[in-house]
Length: 252
Length: 230
Image (cartoon, rainbow over all chains, first blue to last red; front, side, top):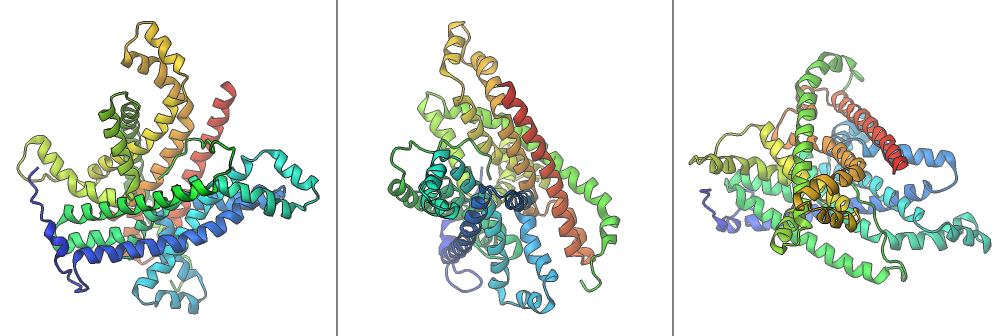
């Protein structure tokens, strides 16, 4: 393969004049992380709530939770991005919709991207939370009730603390998925890491340097997340449990 | 969007959407599924191989694919495939590859990493005694795999493989980034031409939902049937 590598391009100034291409990509990583972290907060909050509600004995609450999960699981992420970016502002009251559309550039794509990714991921978190709760022996819940705790107290003091410790490993991989999935936000104009690698390729014509640099940055980010999370997992592991023998799952 | 929801644009364009777009999406899904499962199974066998370098090579490939975003992988292959093609046929300059074949190769290679992990779990779920009895009967490695281990592994993993295929079906919509005319791409073209974004994207979401939900309901039923037989 005759491709002339030209790595020095990373140190050349990008056309926007903000600094070198390398700096341009690192700022992209900043946007990737800012999107992923904000979405993760939403995903954890909604996911924990919906996942827990789906294990309660209330039939209609469970059905409502299932509906939520099915809707956001069966539509592709990029289509959901378009819905949040193009469709939702049109359906909102005119004043609010216009306000969203007229936000200054990165924010007008950042906000829909965060909402979209947060809700998309919340469904997957909800599934993990539900699986974690269901993996606890039934005796735990019964013992909670038998010691005089109310249903809510049983969840608060007995079930949820254990469930969250058990599902930490699958949550780690969900977190890495949010980081990866945030790249879809480039389709609504958010210049995160992949988007910036793409525009670097367009400006400089250095295709493989741009994509190799982005790939390496993603790999390093993953590595850091894995190392940090393994340390956390070790700390909060429930003594006596081997691991949640997670069933093999489909993913993307 | 001043005049309310316009059903007319959907009525005018749905034939085009399905004939051009959905057929692209479904062909791509089918090709990538077939290629991905074959290649993924080979990768899984490599990962479980007792030859360390082979196992490490496959492991490295799978982990690399699983650590970077699909969008970036699509870009990578979109630019890389012309070079690989030139190298294969010995041409001096990168050859021209259309969006469809670029996407087909991308999704095959990318999904192979995910199918690999599923097949690896499937192979590992088979009791070791099955392999030993295969060898005891005088079968070699390939015969044992093809006649004893893989058929059982496929069967056990069938629901997960199909679920992964539903995800693949949804993920093919990302070929939008290389301007391919898949179902979403076709809808986006109509949406931008007629300035009917709300209608077209809502319609696309509904169609994807119906297909994916229907298929996952089928997978759930299959899962129940397999579970009873087992």
